[in-house]
Amino acid sequence: MNYEEISRGGLERKDSPLNQEEISGIIVVDKPAGKTSAYVDNIIKRKLKVKVGHIGTIDPFAEGVLPVAIGKGTKFIPYITDTDREYIAQILLGKRTDTDDITGKTLYEFDEPEKIKKIPLKDVLDVIKSFEGVIEQVPPYYSAKRYMGKHLYEWAREGKLIELPPSKVTIYSIEVLSVNLPYVKLKILASSGMYVRALARDIGEKIQIDGKKVGGTLYSLRRTRCGVFSEKDAVPLETIKKLDREQILKLVRKITPDILDRRKIVIRGQDIQRVKNGTPPKFKVQGSNGEKVILCDEEDRIIAIGEIRKGVIQIKRVI
Image (cartoon, rainbow, N blue to C red; front, side, top):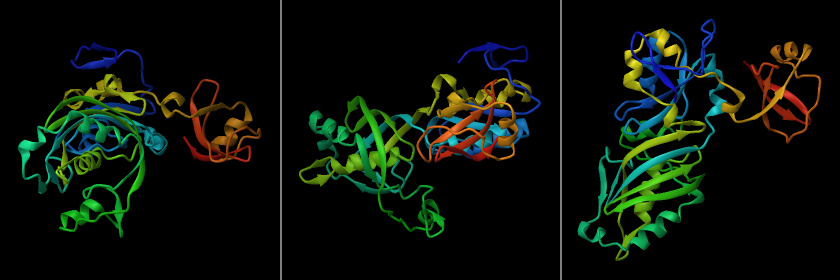
């Protein structure tokens, strides 16, 4: 990210001035471990006095890239969340916990830990690579998935560990960065909805010694990318805490069609007002039914989110 020092201390983006008459955009925060995503929201909300909402929750235990939508930018959250994510994860073999990470209560420990260090490297790598592709994954006991009207973590806090049916997720690639048993460090590129904690658990379940599962839990996790937002875009939360409102506003990134990563359609003339009123533009377009599109004016300002139905752009959300 391109920063320069500013007179009152802190950092400023050189390349994206913000029209402060109407606050709308995204701040990319580097969330520290030990803080919730909601905590980050609250810090920014108190500073800016506007509505905010994060994109893609990070567990309190983890750290890394957390985009936070600001003001009218929160309208875009449903159209940004379905994106790929990249992680650096360290897995500890030989243990399973109720949270599937190192912070949880131990459910299982391998009774001969010295044998874990002797697992052939090829066996470890073969198991890890077997999780690439479209897989079925059972959500962790402590997750935001719902069961009978409550989040799984709410059931778990009551002592009820609910196991839901598996969901299909995609792991595009797993790069093994290091193996120093019982620790394995991975770089993972996956679809949204994939739980790295569950991956750590499942890798530990699949690795066996003398027919016994080894067990696995997530030891550390850093999200290095969330959709188009990466570490180079992220501002440490501790830096944001030290800035005043005007300085923080200079860090806000404008939401563009490129950020939404969807097809852009330019509208002109009377169609602009039609779309602002929630009415489809008069022209028809090619595209598959259900395809989401971004409607912009000639100056690339986003006016609405649309969806193609039989060549007609149905207006889903006016911005």
